[in-house]
Length: 363
Image 1 (cartoon, rainbow, N blue to C red):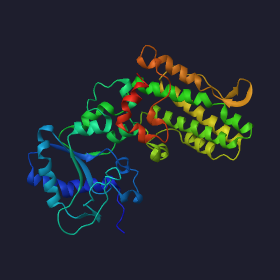
Image 2 (image 1 turned 180 degrees about the vertical axis):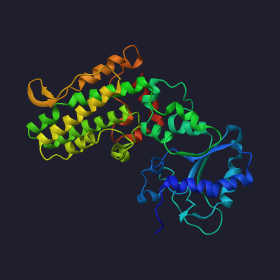
Image 3 (image 1 turned 60 degrees about the horizontal axis):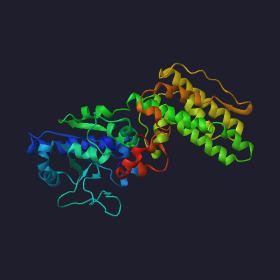
Image 4 (image 1 turned 60 degrees about the vertical axis):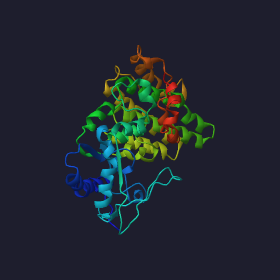
């Protein structure tokens, strides 16, 4: 079995050692950008040996200026003729896209003939239209931002450019993270969603519904995690990598907060669950006050209107942030957060056919 190499390292070496010399020989005057962005766990650095079975391997996106896109077939032909059959033990050749599996391609070793490399030659405008539904990134509305899939925003701004002769990385600066009013809206929405169920973790358990209590705790935990990404100005990936990204040292939030969330979801009793979850809320509240988004919001762990239920009254944070949005179009938008933050429906939020309908929620 060939040694596993992280995809980003594999692709970087493949471009510089195998593909770039071909371009220098045949197209020395050609301006282009090449890199690993867009789809794939390798773009985020989360790939492992299991990732290798499809759409993974020596690959990259190759972007041409619109004036040169007519040379696409010529460039691909040179790659097909001259690239090696293998690179570091991995097949450079891939099957044709499977029309019955969303165009997925699989590595396929060959020893003769031309290779069919996993190299996508596009204009950047076409690529952005495919990913976001627009190639105009410098005049986006709040509704546009809230319609976009957060994971796609992450995938476009992660990865690496191996060569950027078209200065495309600069174009992506416009979407490195949400504009401040959109970030504030999302923060207000997540606190509001927490507030709507903050008393139910204990209440469910008190009537014998421990499963319901755990489910509510998990929903609150997810929203606290999303708040951490927002306070630290980092996009969150979709569900497969959500917990991985949260646990990563790159998300600089107190380990005590991460431990509290883990403890809440693994607690053996309602008392442990409630204590851990309310502790996580308090630590997230501290992040809010450190952020300076609003004036400090006073909070403490207290009873819920005299009942034996512990809360910090998360609604106070939603109200404070919403107050800071007064006078903006987002002040009147329902606090539902983004459609792509709703677990289990990423196939809908990623499907650009539904973007106009999703956008109406925020307009």
